[in-house]
Length: 108
Length: 114
Image 1 (tube, rainbow over the protein chains, first blue to last red):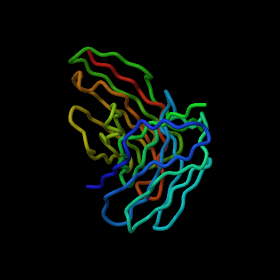
Image 2: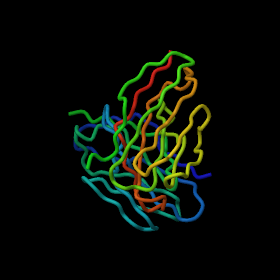
Image 3: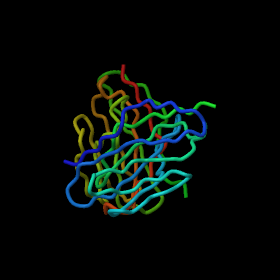
Image 4: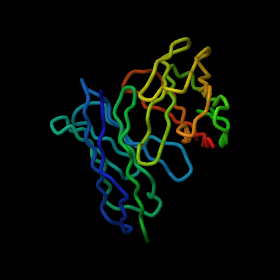
């Protein structure tokens, strides 16, 4: 079946540092790829998505590019803020299969 | 729109008790699903439904039952709770089961089984 592997956390960064969270997937066909974010005590929210190869999803300064040749969908942000502290989940569809999540802590 | 709602928010059960976790959505979504979230395990799919009257098993269905009598509601039943079912449960819905559509998540139910 489909599976998603993302880098283990936790990741601790200083404010304004560059963020990369790696994600690779195994799937048949051409899945859609997603990044979800979970803030403390809340449910998951969609952060960005890409539905075909070479698509770039972006939102709130975060970006991820659907790379079919490397089966990857790495999440990046050029300058993180304290408010970005959360758990980030990579997922592929469908039905949705999630990675185990990466906890990000940003310190001022 | 209220989106996806779940009740209760917190629940404590004794081993062997039964209960139903409620989930409802007001977006006329066809596809609904239940996940459990455990530390270090991410989210794992329990059951899902592609429309009223149609349900199927996910990755970890044992110990859980579901039904989908209406488009709006997708309750999750624990017939005989076990400590291994201590977890946070999330319900989600999507416009369709097509892979292009993102899912919307409820706020979660934190269940403890003693």
